[in-house]
Image (cartoon, rainbow, N blue to C red; front, side):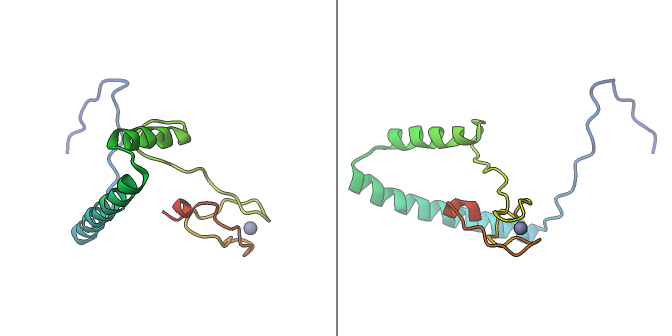
Length: 112
Ligand SMILES: [Zn+2]
């Protein structure tokens, strides 16, 4: 295969294959759709109970989006460190993989 000439400054590394199979992607899409349905159901309870409208919801989403310092429609929580040895914790586990210390979650959203 001949090498393609790339103008300086325009080089982009090859895209890394995610390795996800079609069925894994379909499963994620299915879970996303179910999560959307559940979120909408929860929203209807909150809306009725708290007498707030969707504009208030949108504003709150923007406020929360800003918490990680980047308004990008995503919330990336910072790296959490072990309360005993100080090494980075796997964000999905309370138990340190190095020393076994349990650092309790401070938010349920740390498990996502
Ligand atoms: Zn530790």
